[in-house]
Length: 490
Image (cartoon, rainbow, N blue to C red; front, side, top):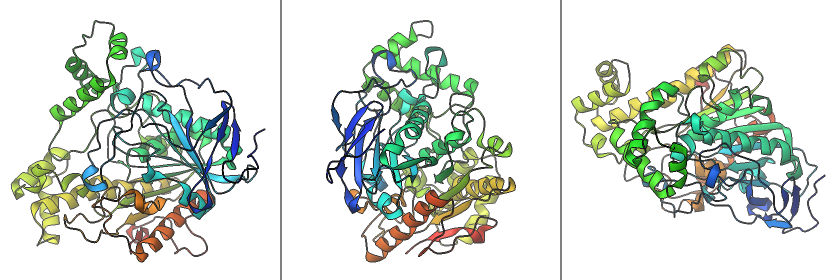
């Protein structure tokens, strides 16, 4: 049985792999960072399913997070700010735990939260996602976890063991939480899986996959790519072949051996080349992401919901008011598009009648240029509308969802971004200081701190009870119509 030590500053927790020593964190919480939940994915474990960690002797210092998984720079640095590269293959499969107090018998609700980044970038250890303030605000245990990204996580070669490996890492993290979180004061029977963007997709996959769904009580999907269609194995095959060709690896060679011998920098560079070669104007879909029918994603989400996969789970979804500006505001092809070019971009992204939809939005925004019209259309088509459709599908199964829209705009806003993709993250975690050069944030005011308390408090209440309502919180109705969408703004 595990217990926290008597120390008030450096508590110690016993886990199955060994003891970890935490540290006092913000808002009176305690942090345990950089805890391995699986063996390092190096050597023969590169392009292999996650394996149990062998453990460590003595007490492991858990004051600092582990390295990020190997990755290319994020395409969203222009709005969220740049990060100093801190990735490494070795010891990248770690997670971080924040608990409100040193009480192992507290049995608090748990949020396991996965970062976004298009399955290509990000880290649960970044200070953007420091969970101390959220844990203290809601009286919950917060966990963030890394998972393999890009080709190391989503190159689909099941014949060598590479089968949605990033998704398998996430499942391993969930199982670690279910087995271990009681030692940190968490209740394994009240686990919410959540995440933003790719992390939202990942959370929904864990909540609907029969292999992991029994471990999940609730799910939060922030700005999830619900309109994204995952490729089948047959559809993924040409992408895999093109990637191997860039690396100079013949299909009839020992592919596993070659891939495991190459420097990780070459694997990442090849993926960047592939992304550039296959990019479509206006598309934000990643090059490599979970394959439908592969590990962790056995069926489309809508099919899973229709068969009742979420019937016993509470669901909360959300979007930002101007999601696609994160991707389009600094895209020269979009920024300089004429009306005709904007319609062509739209036609290439959807099966809808692009010209008809464009004309409708253009009439509603008579002073907007083609880039602004296209951004609004894409935000609705790929974010707001799919979220509402998803919530309606959940409600049809007798389990209504809650939906929010985050509308806080930065001040100043020289790029006319509005509330972009990722804009809600500093408010959820209360980590304004971690975004010093983020155009999406701007200057932080007292009203922004109040907004963070309201937003974080509502989501924490949902983690605790299944409802984002509670003392001091504005009433938030389950979704039945657009009038039920809860707007978070100054």
